[in-house]
Image (cartoon, rainbow, N blue to C red; front, side, top):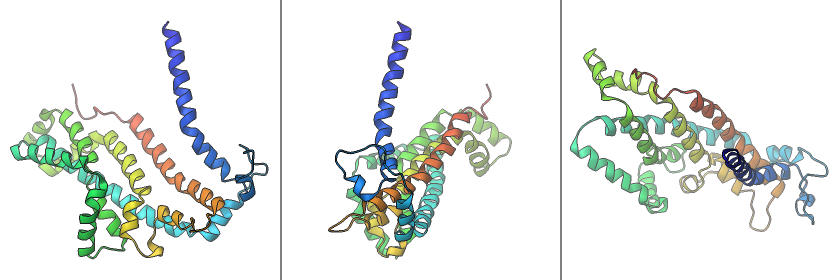
Length: 272
């Protein structure tokens, strides 16, 4: 009976995996087709004459390197700052015993119930007042504070024994040393998880860069992809090839940090 249940679980997992990955595979294979074959009837799964011409055309018509640099700059800086801020706030909310901290935490947690669209107007007003409109930093600063990251880090730091911190204080370590040399190393897995999510959020972000950027040379990849969709026609071959190219960095980051998550020891630094 257990073997039957195990087989059914694997079959269900395999089926769900196929359903999830099929659109991605279809996108990849379609990017190798020419324009006429994309809309031929009946549809064919495998291209009759696979070609990388669409990717060559994408590099020629699409300033891919420039848009990639803009997106990478925003994504990397925002991810690093998000990790630092989330770790600091999560540690303070978990280990410092002040009554007002609990009130602050629940107030911050309540902000997750608000739709992003609700705070876009006040955020844009602050952005414009600070003179950050139409700048890459204007896409970075408003996205640093994410309650998801703060909550993730707080929940982890709560599980860290207070005795570890107290013993470090007895040995003469100040708060900065405790945080940077003790707390940060033992939460590598959580940092990796947050890095993956933050990188994906910022890399695929469309709405906020659309509001914050005006100059085409400062566009991110997602904004630049929109320019391939004209009012009367869409260059599908270039759009598909460019879409595949934008997925590669996210996939690489996931592979790197996923290995760290699997190999990291969450209890490192805590001896029984």
